[in-house]
Length: 176
Ligand code: S3P
Image 1: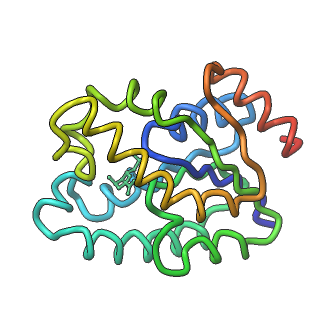
Image 2: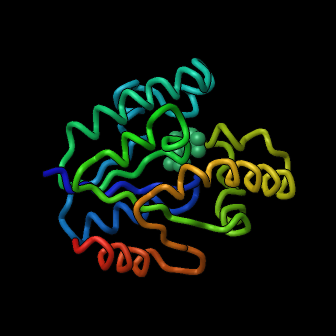
């Protein structure tokens, strides 16, 4: 039985922090797809985008997603913000038997607050010049992506909630 918990959400929605805390509390293993990709490709995500471009990144992202869904059981897997939105990835995630997908839903203003100082590490938002541009970009991007994210089995609103409380909610929903 797979019994994975798959965390989905926009950049800055807390997937990694929540995943790590959940792993610590439950002794499930934790995998961050971005780190897995960086490990396998021996390059940071920012450098993969810079040197090989987004199309290449999306191709390897799908391959590594498949690989880790096959390899990992009883694990918490946090995906990249774009992972569910390309190819058949979301369908693949939903087809995982005995796994729970959870969308961490966060408002645009909260995401802007969390991401404004992190632009350098994040190739998709690094072109925005100020808070207004970042906010406009995230508003449109999140709107497009919500169609994919909201197919997740569960959605949790993370605005004004601590990591500990979000983890509590996930444990309540999934019985881990
Ligand atoms: C991306 C999100 C990033 C990373 C890459 C692309 C996206 O992951 O996969 O920069 O398309 O939203 P995080 O959501 O973990 O930052």
